[in-house]
Image (cartoon, rainbow, N blue to C red; front, side, top):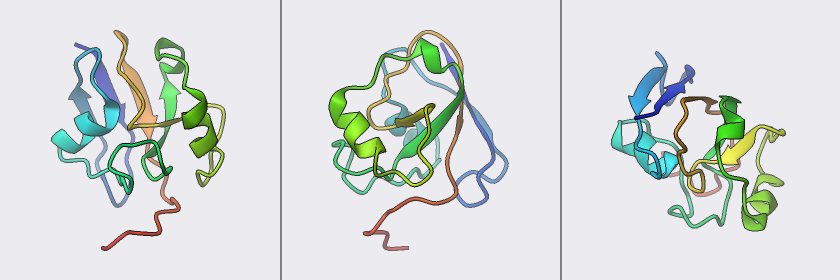
Length: 111
């Protein structure tokens, strides 16, 4: 089973983490199931960019994003060529390393 290494994020995962994620699983749901509270204002419908992550290692092992994901990534704070929406990212067979950006444009954050 592939391993997702989550780099430290001072709010969501201060120590960083390594989690096993089954091939074919969506990254956002796997993060949430492992106690990493990735923002997801649109409830995983690819209608916002709050679950934006940067894939620091293993990017090429993931499927190509759909046009709808690219459209949302255009609005993500700090988006780059290695950006993905975790709600749309389906795990492949290889390990990946992700960074959860410190800031996002979550206009409905209730915390």
